[in-house]
Length: 410
Image (cartoon, rainbow, N blue to C red):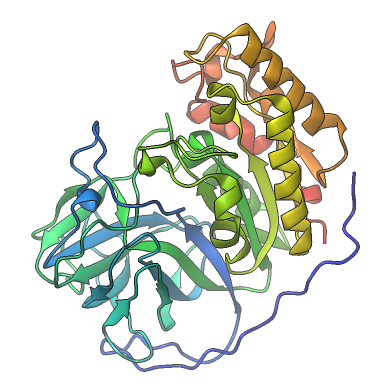
């Protein structure tokens, strides 16, 4: 396998500490920042089969309470708010972070007001993002946070992540600092945030970004249970003694490597168009795992086209000093996208991933979940029922296929 000749050292950035209104300022220096959770954003739009997500029309005088699962813990937290796909400025009137109790309620005493340059509000320009000041909040690895964001004025369509396998919450008025769940109703999508960093212990030396489609994102996993394959990988890494890493999920349901899905912005921009934002700017990124391409095959892209896309992703990762691991595309025999021509493309792409030597390592997801007597189909125990998306057990098998020593090699 190709070895990188040089790996860029992660810079430690000294952040100013700002006193927040709820005794939640960043405290003494210590630890270092790593991405612990992220969600790849898409443009706000109406989704025909998910009308309860309000991102298409936007919010006004409402608070969204996002529920996020941390892959790593630490002594402090900071949050990235986003207007990446907005066409006009959005003012954040208040925001907070807390440890989740039951549903929309916080664990008592954990609500922390978020500030931005010492202010409780911030205006996000169209296409912009903002990083909150750090707050002191001890959070455990594999724990769940509530990130609440209040918008006082009408926003128009909101940047969001629509397919979450996670129940979130929405309330009228500014309830960003409320410790209770009173007034909150259900909401299926993450809105206005796309990242949470933690001030981690030394053993969490950086983050691993999983770049993919619905199989990485959420599809067919049990809701509110955090059973995506990157979640299982985070559990493996957290249980490992010594040096380890956090895991960032940069999966997008329906996403393609090569092209957008015209008229359907909720599938996101292609992987080749989101590398900088969704992968390279993640805090402390040290490695990338790529497992994408099944949607390109479903749109009848050829093996040569998909491989060329992979080569460009590899080149850009290496230009950033990052090792990148190629994941084979999981089987889809018996699914709605199966044709003889598409299976031939799948075989050719996976053969290249396994044998080309262009990746820094290979994760053979396909073999991990394939039926013993048919490598072109998911094993029944790992099949969600659509013969395309692995179920919870399949996602765990995928995570178990990752070679941790190779992933953690410096």
